[in-house]
Length: 116
Image 1 (cartoon, rainbow, N blue to C red):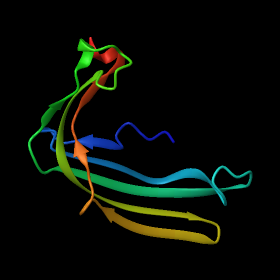
Image 2 (image 1 turned 180 degrees about the horizontal axis):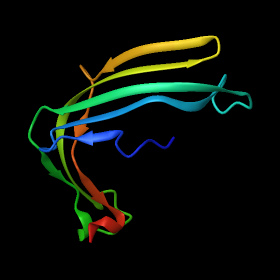
Image 3 (image 1 turned 90 degrees about the vertical axis):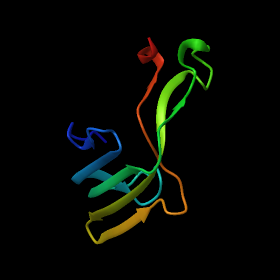
Image 4 (image 1 turned 180 degrees about the vertical axis):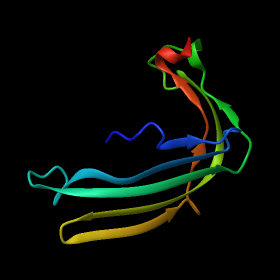
């Protein structure tokens, strides 16, 4: 699904980010990949906040492009929270989730042609 350019926002210091979309039109299926679909809409807001310092990861162009380490990034452990909702004719849902007891990271990365 394509989102508007302003759906993803990062704070000036890079330690917080938000992805938000409201009433995005989608097609819902009664079984994964099933042949019957109905119009639906979804909304969500996901927030990340760094909880530690950034650490450099990857080896960039020092290794072949097919090597899993062929990227450069600076990642900080993070906490994330999200709210989600969706509806179609006759059905709707709302939910919340967070990474307490789970895992999230936040930070920039470069890979592929962006390494040079």
